[in-house]
Length: 250
Image 1 (cartoon, rainbow, N blue to C red):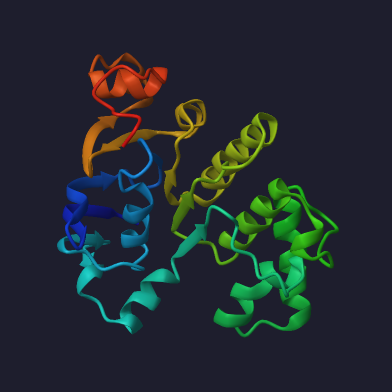
Image 2 (cartoon, helix red, strand yellow; image 1 turned 90 degrees about the vertical axis):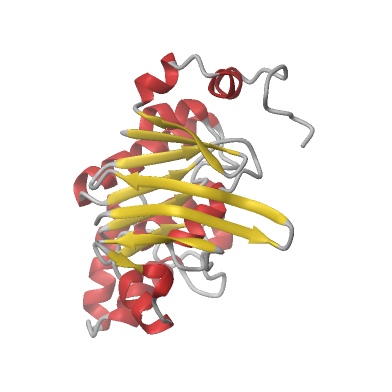
């Protein structure tokens, strides 16, 4: 699906979080949005998902402005989305199998046996065969992320949204999750957006990179262009220096 963000503004009282974002996500590719904390990355994702209404601007998805839609129209668009939140957002009272099967139960008329067959296939796809009866509290953080990904791809989404998918994971598990995201995106052909603060993970994942700073697009381009950029903001963020235009105290 085509996602085109035009002049997007969002303010909370006197604080401006998004200050005129213009961004077109390459269709069928992975876009990674990076930037310091508090620069509006997750707020941007929530606007694309329709969980927040902007103070100004538009978000066109396949040519339709979702900021002008009512809840019914938004829900129809969201059926094309798969979302992985930072904490996986699993239902603690449901088993792993019930969590992954939840989209089928809500949006389809499949039989219980067919849902469970698909659940087993999805868990196998993310490397978690045989844990359908476990509760989320009984599995590791990395496994919960994988379960969240299995649920996100259950209905064959055209758009995949990831909010800090490797937060809280060790480097080995972070690399495994990033590799899985790439594999899933390749299989689905989805237009994917990943919010991240992990530079190395971003460079591995991205077909297209965006850096936000001060609620604006400070950089957009290929990972190669990002690495070769001489822009002081990009250099400081990539190198992790405390000297430069980014104030680490803010």
